[in-house]
Image 1 (cartoon, helix red, strand yellow):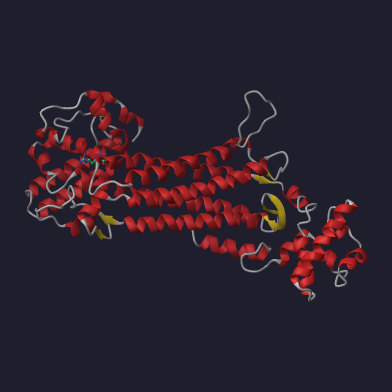
Image 2 (cartoon, helix red, strand yellow):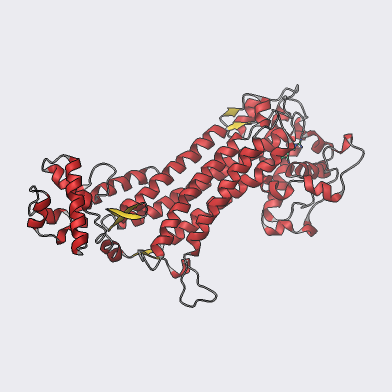
Length: 472
Ligand code: ARG
């Protein structure tokens, strides 16, 4: 909904907008009514609600439950309402109860009894479950497209840096040389699984709850198969109580959001570390950095920090949804109204963060010289020295011991790398060392040697990038 739809002046206040008023002589006071209303959150389901109502009305006409002309009038009016909402000619009354009652109220105001016929065989319980699924069916593909574009942007950088050596870390201590391409491809491998998680969630929620009614279906001869097909669902849901009571699909989508956001938070932590003066591996574009209000020299990685911080929200939303469902008696309870705020927040957060992260990473420059220099000094080549000896027949445990002693020798002698030792010095720890050891210990050689599937060797990283590209 755009802001202009908040403009109360143009909004239509439907008559009888409270759908349940008949049974109750008294209406809640304004504050209490507003407390139980959900319009502020479910207004974004307006078009899905209209889509569902159009299909429901057409089916009611076809099944002879309402006159064919009434079904046609309802369809035309619902189409008009959608167009008016789109253009801003019609705005949603922020004081309405929920999106379902306001659309039905407008129909009734404009069409009289025809409007009063649209809800036959339907409850807001199946209606809201339907609207939410329709909303996810159109927004998850868009979110997956954002994810795919983000992966694409990272892979462009990975490709550019397939040969740029950098230290790989464990325990945030320099461990072994890798390439920046390898590191970025590692991020992408996780994001590609996230793509799959959204697709899986979408496939499982692809069933229409319409016709489940309040919980027990209806005695009216609805055609659930027809409405499911017309709405683009694989089919109708199996059980009417399950249809209105469960929100496992919302938990699943929120979990996929939380996992994606957790991934982003880790990547952003890497970026924050890399952007520090101590590392200086990355130079974020000025447009993707912020300054300090007091310290004139500052260029802060605020975007990365904020994306990292927003993972708190998406994690919280999963907990909210799980807690909402925990112990909730079957079938529908009003508690379920709380599902949408958490779910929408997760979807919005991930979408925004993917876009920001993509912009930040696509414009970043990498300081490949600093990365390369950081491969020297932490004895990242020690494992390769041990593997050199293994290749010459020494049992690994002995090779590990010899390389460890050499590292100690270096530290004692104030040397920064194994290559600084002479061959006779190396031979003191193992006779198997030869002249070719020096060539084997350069960062580029260490990386090139690790060409197994999954490894950081440039050609292998290019192969990984190709596969990742193929899966987006
Ligand atoms: N606003 C409600 C929700 O989001 C719609 C369903 C209301 N049903 C009811 N029986 N109160 O869940």
